[in-house]
Length: 325
Image (cartoon, rainbow, N blue to C red; front, side, top):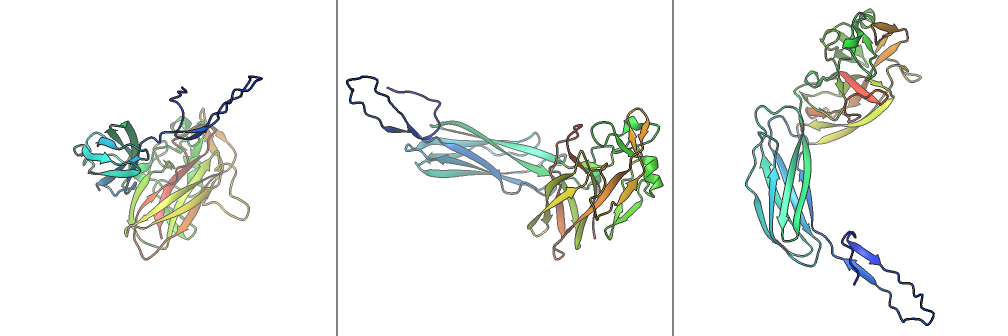
């Protein structure tokens, strides 16, 4: 008898070599391991509006030859989220699937960011676990700011744009005509530079955050830069009518400068370095835009997922402002 419980489902072949000089009349054949049940978990809308419900569907599949009896699914939700009772699916026949659907509500105090939902399915075929995520939105790009990219020349340690302690200089920005809360005009669009003083959070590191917009126009513009770039990433525009539009941003590096034939939105003569020192090399912020469907309001924008925070030596994209024109 041959036994190996670690084999994956599907067709396997056993090869037997006859070492008996007289021949043993051995038989070589194939065998099939049983197909295993599975659990798929998904949300109907991974980017719900603020305060909106989330629908989670757990699909139990039975590709085997025996029925799955007493199938039941339980959904585990984050603290404060509503949840329902376990749902009984009864018996799932061979080569069939059964679905359990849960609609859950966030708490009024739900913070923006990713939330996870875990489904646990039990049956005569065993216990299976699956999970999915939804991204609850920030009320504005400013609310998503998580990095201090500008520092004072006399206190450079308060800023860190690249994960290695270097940052824009507030003085160099001012010399370029940009001060907290001022208007930056680039690419035919008007942006508002963050109002934070030097050392305050003033940019969002692109990590797939969803940002509420609720505005319409012909162009979506970003004021951004990349560190350890250039860097690129794909984002999503969510319209109020439920449709979506993907876009790709290719963001030049803040130190290398704009590609040939293009220009920067803001050019600074130097950058701040660790130890209250300055690096006399120009650095840059850029404008990029995406054409919109002007017939529908933009409900939200999902930023590209370029990195999870800042790590020195690794590419990241920073958003200082976003506007619709």
